[in-house]
Image 1 (cartoon, rainbow, N blue to C red):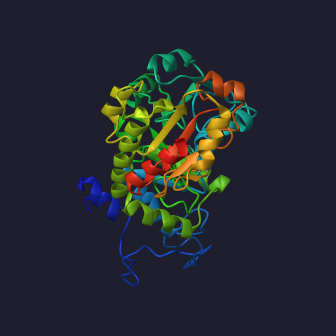
Image 2: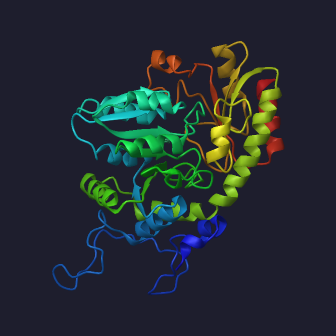
Image 3: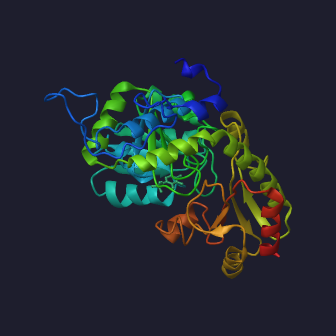
Length: 384
Ligand SMILES: *Cc1c(COP(=O)(O)O)cnc(C)c1O
C-alpha cells in the first residue's frame, strides 16, 4: 500500500490497520498470547515470544511510524520506559544536553537513575539554540528536546537544533507528547528519534499508560529493539489495541483541542485575575514565531499564573473547578486542572523549579474537547 501518500486525516484512520487474514476482522485482534507455536525449531511465522514480538503491538508500531513520518515504531509500557530505552543507547562517560524545563519524571530519571550510572546531563534553556551549541562537548552523544515543554510551554526550534546536532554527529531525540504528530512531526524537521507518552494525546481517553519511539534509521531501530526486548518494558496487547483505537480520532480530537485551547487562552489573557498565560499560539509567547513555523496548531495545553502570587488563592482555584477535574496527566478528551509544583513536577527540587521559572503558583490546564462555553463558565466561577 502506498500509505505514505495518504493525507493526514486518512492516515490516522487507516495506519497499521490490515484486516485479520484468518477471519477478515476489520479491527486488529488483541493477541493475548505469550508464545507462538513453531513448525520446527527456529521455523516460525516471525513471532517467537511476546516480549520480542506481538501482532497487536506490531500493528500499533507500524501506525506510529506512519503518523510521525519515520520508518520504524517501538512501543513501550510507559513514556518513561521509552525515554529509558533512548538513554540506554549511551555508555558511561557520555553526555546529554537537555532542557531545563521538562516533564518531572524525565528530570527524575535523568538525575536519579542515569546520572548515578555515569551519564552527565547538561540542562540548558533550549529555547535559544545557541545555549544548546554552547553546552556541547566532545563527549556529547545525545540532545534531548521537549517542545512544547511540560508545564511552561517553552518552544525550541527543532530544525535549528537538528542542524547543529547533525553537523557534530550527535543524536537528537524529541519528546513530542504535548504536540502529537497531528501538530508537529520532528523527524521531518531533522530529528533522529521521536518519543511519546502515548498515555496522553495518542491514547486520548485517559485509560492507558504507554510510551512510544519512532525512528527513521534502521540500525537505530535495531539497537532500540534490542534494548526493548532485553530490558522488557513492553506494553500488553490490550493496551496496544486501546492506543490503536485512540489514533483513529487523533486528527479530529486535536482540531477540537486546538480550537478550545485558543478560546480559553484568549479568555484567560483578558481576565483581570490572570497575570500571565503560557500558550504557544499567543503572539506574546516567547517563541510564537518558531511555534508557528514548526506546528500545525497549538493544542490544548495552557499554563497560567494569577495576579498576587498567592499560594492559598492558587489552591482555592484548583479546588473550585467542577468540569475541570483536579488530576495529573493530560491529553484526554476530558479537561483536567493540575498544580505542577505539588503534583506532576514535585520530583524537581523547589529551588531548581523556581530558578527555571516554574513558580509554586503556576496552574496547568489540559483543555479537553467539551464545549468551550461550558469550560469557560467553569473557569469563570472558579476564578470568581
Ligand atoms: C507524561 C509525560 C511523560 C511520561 O510518560 P508516562 O506515560 O507517564 O510514563 C513524558 N513526557 C511528557 C512531556 C509527559 O507529559
